[in-house]
Every structure is written in C-alpha cells, then in structure tokens.
Length: 218
Image (cartoon, rainbow, N blue to C red):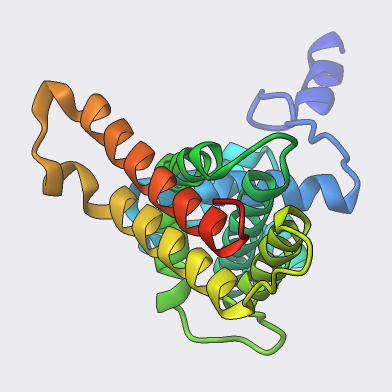
C-alpha cells in the first residue's frame, strides 16, 4: 500500500516532478533575455537555441514562446536591448558628475569591450523590425552632449550642434572599432592594456582641447 502511494506522488518513472518557480512577466522576460545573451555571446544569433535558453533561465520552452512568440522575436528583443544598453552607458559617460573627455572616452571604450560592440554589430546586421528605433538613440546622446557643452561654454560663445554630433560620431566609431579589432591592430602583446590606455588618453585629450577651444575657454 505504501509503495502505491509513493508511486502516485513520484509518477510512473519514480522521479519527483520538477517544480517550476512562478515569476512575474517582467522578471521572466529578463531571465530569458539574460540567458539568450549568454548564448549569443558565445556563437552569435546562431548560438541561440530555445531549449538551452529555457534550461539556463529556469523556465519552460512554452514560457519563452508565450513571452516572445518565436526564436526570431527573441533575437530581435535581444538586439533592441543591446541598443538600449549602448545608450545607457554612453549617456552615463557624458552626464556623470565631474567627467571630462579624459574620463568619458575611457568609459565609452570600456563599455564596448564587455561584448556590447559585438552585440550591436549583430543587431545592425539583423533585418529591421516595425517599431525598431535603430541607432536613432544616438540623437539623444548628441543632444545630451550638446547641452553639456552649452553649459561649459563662455558667455556669448555659440556652440555648434554639428560639432557635438561629430564628437559623438568620432568617439563611437573609435570605441566600436577598438573593441572589434583594436587588440590585433595594436599587436601590443604583453603591453596591450598600457598601449590601449595611452590611445584612450590621447583621444580624450584631443577632444577636450578642441571642445575648450570652441567654448572660448582657451
């Protein structure tokens, strides 16, 4: 009798059923995206398999489909998150208290080195989806930098919006390219970090000198 009761509790296989944790939708989406990000980091979009994502996130395969609809939609959501992450770190680099170009440039370079550059590259290669903002997020970054330059300018000195846009463009291209091919381009070996830091300092000083000149501070 006791054996029959035990069998009912554990099922015919003798194994206890896996108890899944009930999570709110926002938390579930975050866990799924984090798990998918890990798969993309190792092998790109092709490395995302829903069964692996479900296992890492601790959710069921149907749960992923419930929140995202398909594997393709999950990848698009991951791409949008990459662009939002990019905007977040760049805005922080610009607006953090007391930061000059010497500080903002290394912060931007560091942000791209954690794998964000590769994620943004994959996002750019994906077909655009309805509602995607693309890289228009950079306009917000340009406006934020421009407002900061206006605040720092000497009284009566005009600040050119084109300059602000060019600074963001230059810094973005440099940081993005450095994260992708910088180490091979420098071929610095054991001096890689020292050489990279010298380049970041050089670029930061270059931008700072130009900004101060345009602001009438020199």
